[in-house]
Length: 328
Image (cartoon, rainbow, N blue to C red; front, side, top):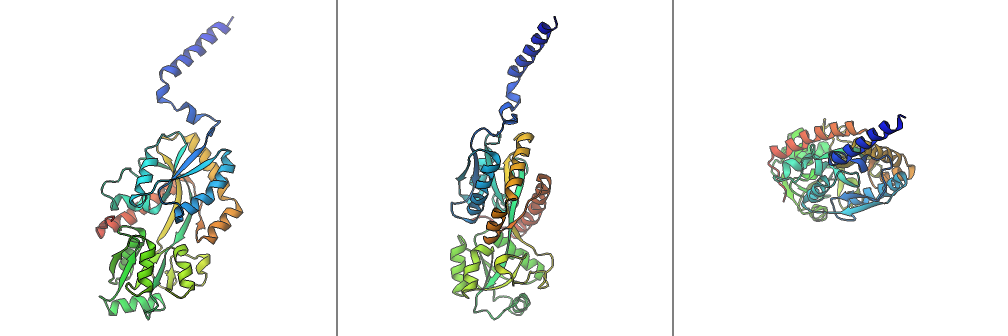
């Protein structure tokens, strides 16, 4: 005789769920998640470094999640357009954001009207990898070591121009950090992308450039530019000393890649995505592919990722503000 009261109680709970349903994310919290394709917003053009890395991860995530994973390239304004779009997406776990140091750590200082708050509008899922920075110089410059380069700069304070892939880019801010760490003077020359910066370096119009290994390897091997040091070991530059080994302390600029979701995404969904990313990152073929592309696999817990983001915002944002770096 207790079935009727129980039934009425259950119906009452169901009615309450219907009444207050808008405040709960029933579909996103469903243990069956995911049940449809997931889109990763890559805020850079197809074929670029970030796009290539996430397309490598895409296949392994599909296998781990059991649904299709779609890459949606939404480039513009140094990656801030696509990141803003993803940050404002429905927080149901079906739209994620490919994040990098530039779009998350330095963008707030470089773009006066950033369409998202990196800490408030996005939640970390996990990291994928890092790529170091290499200091390359024109072959016409006599310097063959970092010590030579710093010595030349101090002896000739107006002689060196260094290029970057754009105002406020990490290659720009790495150059400014290098100046701070060494006490040298260099004039910054911004370009619209890596190709024109490299062309002017090889022609001797600028003397130095900070960039990532994948963009430089072919030119260095061809003798068209000379690599002096790297921020951390990389397979493509196995014999190149690190800046620390060359005597430059506390100079380890790196570009990282991570996966994030809109901030209100339910924790069970974030945890499911995190588990899938963990599985993907353990794939030996993926790790080998990333290393071949000059990216070191890097996988940490979301809370560690968030702390890393906060530290990088302080570092790169501080440097950007100190030199009044503004995006082109």
